[in-house]
Length: 143
Image (cartoon, rainbow, N blue to C red; front, top):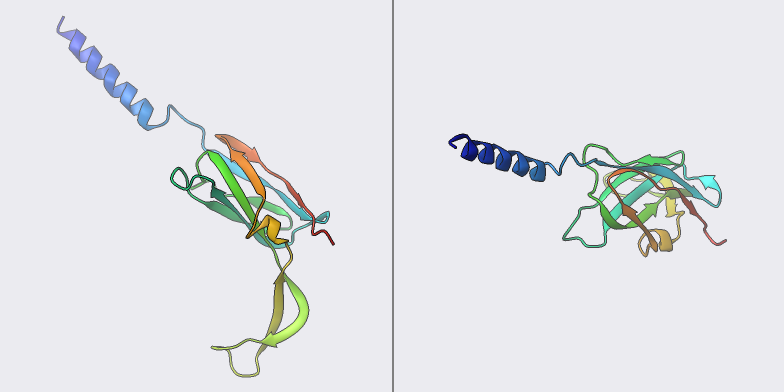
């Protein structure tokens, strides 16, 4: 009879540990490809912003040659997310660099290649689930 309380205590501790560790939950992995008008986005960023910001945190990655992968070490948790994609591109013009660069220093003028409906006013939404999430985005500029 004295072993019953000990067994119960061990069971409660084990159950508590399973709850705290998420029962061995699978981490979220996010990767994919981004194209604009059929061409891979050369360089940019992708950000996953939780729809309910009280239940999640943002996460993102750089886009290089059309591919991205969110850092597996600190991905956002499962849930619904709005996605913002940016990709700066050169306009072909030079503009003054401004301070603190020396006077007369010129740099490439940049503009946003991705329409606002995919970034600051993004209409893109995806649900992140535990495990591997592959999201490819085929964006169009409408031009």
